[in-house]
Every structure is written in structure tokens, then in C-alpha cells.
Image (cartoon, rainbow, N blue to C red; front, side, top):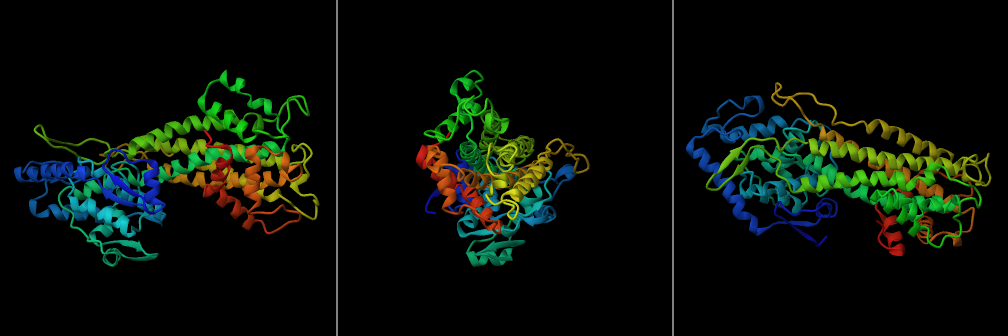
Length: 511
């Protein structure tokens, strides 16, 4: 990717993070930030020269905050901090999450309140540009005092320690850095704390989850339109007048999307034409999807703010009235609650999608469609078992949607007596999102099959394009086939956002 993202701590966007983390965009430090970085570092040096005791610079950490550290042991203090905190467990984070972590941490410390050396920021940027990706174990953060454990694993290769992936090979950290031509560093006073006392592990997960969830909300509307057409849904429920008298913006936007997607349909019906009302999974889509959109706007705004926030401790405020203040910006509670909310709102998108799947496959509910969407039932099971899969994923989502942020276990001998568990919430949200993408893709498969039992030419403008996109990958199923390859193809259309891109080319950008 030729795009270059310049970081200055103030205007990084979700799209910028995705460009670097997922698509390999290069990163540069904004030259205008160098003065602020140097000034905050000079404050650290002046503090050490004065012999003033300041938390994290020449004292221990957490419960050891009253323990003074000699000048001779300052570098050892920072090294030991990384060593002791690199104790994560579980599988490694995906590469895109690690790249997001590196970018977000570099963006935070370059703002000029962290006291790090220029070479430390350069090291993170050079790792991103060279493709050196630390192996970061995903479990072990309680989300306050920052993401200490995962960020320590991120820092190890910077010091020539730990492990890193380079050109698809996992290597000792020093070897990966050497092969990539990236210089390792020796952490100086405060730098170890500045690098790990932040929210970037939860945020690496959060930013990518928000980006994909925003796409999924639109994709859910698209797939719903094809289901609606296939079931000859009653279009009156999407009448603008209905939604303007209950003016939640999310509801209004979903109803508008559905009207645009179904424009020109000859398969939708009017109330009383074939039946008086549809079940809620069709009739109440604007209200259900719309409520998730309302919650999503809060989540997105919170994440956008955190991207350009300073989250380490203590913070350096240089200048004539210079100060080094120990606060609590590392506490992940804002992201913890936002990620729990994201998990809940995405769970509901999958929940109602599974009900539409059931409506299509169940002959008691499907308004004349063949049982399990197969013409020759009995010898063929048709789409019976994909509904089981959707039900399993939705059920698992309900367990995962229990909020992590309502729990707290004190750490550091009760010095850190309330923690956020935000990284757990962010990891859960990504899992829920993945499950929801699978459920929506199963609905897409079913809706295309259901549509084939009527006139394809009569589908709406957007629903027809959704059908065409699906049929380019998966054929109409006349007899049972090995299902999972077709499910994988449908999933890829949703996960890679190809379905959204194709439909928006036809109907314009959706709300």
C-alpha cells in the first residue's frame, strides 16, 4: 500500500489505523512533533539532575511507589519492568492487532507528554515499516495500569528480547530486528513505563472491531432486504412516516436503507394484500437494527477519542510551570464499557438474523417456501443444519455478551483496587463480531436460495445486486452438497466487505 500515515498524536483516524494495521500503509512522524517530544524528554533529564523523587522515573512501580531507585539502577528498573510484565498467556494476537498496538502507542507517546527518547518512537515506526511484528500473547491484561502484560510483550523485541514475526517466520526478537535492519534500544528512565502504561492492546482490538462492525451494520440491512424480498415482506412497515414519529436516527436510517435497497421490487407486498402483518424479524428491522446503530455511535465516538489520547502515567507537562503528574489516564474503563456495548449491539444483529433464517427454512413460517429451502426434501436436508450453526453462534454470543467491565479484581496489593477488564471486553467483542459475520453470511445463503423460488427479475435494486453477488460465488442448491465451502464463500463476501462494496455501487452509499 502506497499510502503514508503521518502521526502527531492528534488526528489519527480509525481508517488510518486500519490502513496501517491491515493493509500495510507506511508510517512517518510529523516533523512538527519533534520539539514537543524533545521538550518532554528534557524535563525527565532535568528532574533526574535535581534528584527529585518522581513516580516511575526514580521510584518503584505500583505498591513499590515509595521505594527510591538509585541513579545507577534507573536503566535496570525499566528493563526489569518489561521483563516482569511480559508474562502473558494464550495464543498470540493476530498480526493486524499487533500492528495497531505499535501504531497507537507511537501516536500516543509522540504527543509530547510521555518523556520518551526520539529513538524509541523511531524504533516503533521502523518496526511497522519493516514488518517486524512482536509475538504478543492475548491474555493477561486487567485493563488498568494500562495493558501492562501485552504491551510488555510488544516492547521486548525493541530491546532485542522476546519473539517477533518477520516475513512469515517467528524468530527471536534480536534476530528479527537484525534481519529487518531495525536498531534495538536500551530503555532509559521512564521509557518502559511510558510504553506499557496505556490502553493500546484493548484499543488495537477495539479500532478494528469498530471498523468492521460499522460495515456489518450496513451488510445486515443488505441481507435483510434480500430476505424480505424472498418472503414477500410488507413494505408499509418501512414507510418514512412511521419512523419520523419515533425519530431515533438509527431507526430512520435503517428504514431509508431498506427502502432504497428494495426500490423497484415486484415481490414486496402491501398490508392486507397477502397478510396483514409480518413477524417482528421483518417488520421491526428498523427498530432492532436502528437501536444497535444508536449504541454504535457512542462506541465509535469513544474509540475515536481514545485513539489520540495520552494514556500513560505519570504525565509530563514541561514549560515554565513544568509538572510531572501521576494520574489515571491508563485506566481502561471508557473503552471497557464501550467494548461491552459493542458486543451487545452486534449480538442483537446476529440474534435477529438467525430468526430470519428460521423464518425462511421453517415451512410453518415461510409463506409457502419449501421446507428447508429444498425442492426435493426428505432425501435432502437442504438448509436445515446451517440454521443449527447460526443458533449455536447466537447462543455463544449471548454468553460472551455478558459485560467484562462489571467485574474487578484488585491488583498490586490493593494499590490498584479497581480495574477495567477492558481488554477482555475488546477481545470478546471481536469474537462476537466474527460470529455475527458468519450468521449474516448464512442468512445471505438462505435468502439467495429462497429468492430462487420466485422471479429474480422482480427483486429490488439492491436486493438483486446482493443476489447476483452471492450467485457469482455459490450456485442454487438443487440437491445436498458439502456445505462448508459454500458457507466459507458467503462469509468471505461479508468479512471482506465485497457484498457491501458491490451493492453500494448500485444504490449509492448507505446510511
